Length: 118
Image (cartoon, rainbow, N blue to C red; front, side):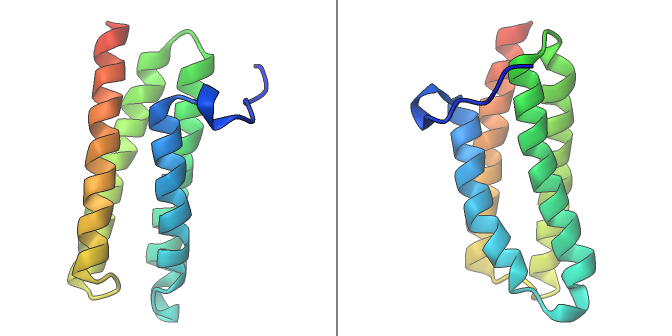
């Protein structure tokens, strides 16, 4: 496995998009109430970080479909946890809407990459 490029120009657009989302998401989940920080925040953050690993794996391995499908499944899990976080008022509606738009866009990008691999 090679090293990751340092330049954003050589990164896949879906990777750049997800990294930008992570930079937004991690500080947001940090502001969740302390009583749910180890349940909701940690789970959301772990799923989001796992997506990064899936994208790296997909880029650098032959069988991209497995990693792309795994990333797509994690996006769906994130949608559910963020929706629940919004309903329980850990996340305001404006941030929830933004998160859904970002996740949906990355999902479309993943779908395009998966179709390209078929």
